[in-house]
Amino acid sequence: MSVLSPPTPTTQRVLPTRAEVRAVIPDRCFEISTARSLGHLALSLLLTAIPVALAAAFLPLSWAWAPVWVLYALVTGTAAIGLWVLAHECGHGAFSTNKTLQDTVGYVLHTALLVPYFSWQRSHAVHHSKTNHLTEGETHVPRPRDQSRPTTRQRFGRTIHATVSLFKMLVLGWPAYLLFGATGGPERGLTNHFFPHGRFESDLFPPRWHRRVWLSAAGVIAMHVVLIWWAVAAGSVAPVVAYYLGPLAVANAWLVGYTWLQHTDLDIPHYDADDWSWLKGAFQTVDRAYGPVIDFLHHGIGSTHVAHHIDHRIPHYRARAATDAIAAAYPEWYRHDPTPIRRALWRIAGDCIGVEERPDGWYYTAE
Image 1 (tube, rainbow, N blue to C red):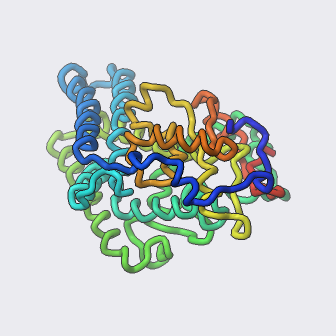
Image 2 (image 1 turned 60 degrees about the vertical axis):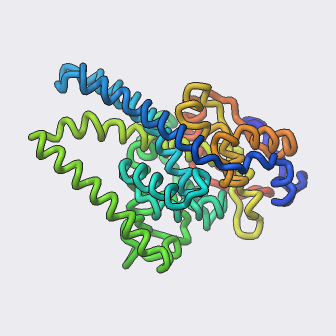
Image 3 (image 1 turned 135 degrees about the horizontal axis):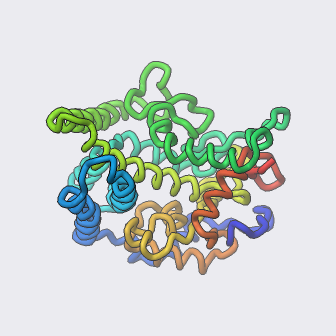
């Protein structure tokens, strides 16, 4: 189903059971190969390291070369998302049957990217368990449209609104989510992935998870110490910004952009408690056309995400076969939008203001 097609009322479609959907996915899609996962890890490490090595060898650290450093950040940050995706796969248990190896790889990779591994493993699991739930969802949860107040789009125009939305999401969105729970479900209020106490205490991180939250925070703190040591040793913060923070900002933008596009558009419904079910929510995930190069670098995370939400145990190298099986068996539920990514992102940033209730769910409205 294209996101651009008129939404079909869910009451006119028969929602399959979870068991029925699982039955159409080939059993081989659940086979995890540690060797194959490690091979993908080695490839992503190599592709990320190559631009770093080239910059270190040939790129002067001066303002005159700033445009080239921007290009370096774009290339390196884009390559680094491959590592991000593999760490995410570790958190889901789809990287290896060896849990110790899996958590070690995930913890190291995510910590290197300033991500609290276990904390995000927990909040991301909540996102999967409550996908497109209007009040209990986690990340990119919409707010009902207040018809009594003018929107920023009505006050400033679509272009300004879309530009500000893109900046807020792609630049500020990831740290705002980790530190304050921005775009999280309203029932949980303020949350913090490093300090789940005081005003940040919530069921997002129950007491049994506190030790893992602290372990995650310790890793990120240690990474900050390394970065500070690097700047002191170099006598300047410039190499830290140029080599590391620039690509990190690009990687964070990719991460937020992916998640935003996977669960948001004008015909993607969210459901309140009376209408929501796990499978109905999972089927509101959208696969999009990122092209072969990005799919290769990012292990198909954007083009096979429906299957990932149907069952996160599927490793990324089996996700295409699972996606094809789901799409063939349930074309009335499977969502794929061929709109070019830049156009889709601009549409969402400019038109997805707030949601309003319709007979079959809560949908974004542009006005």
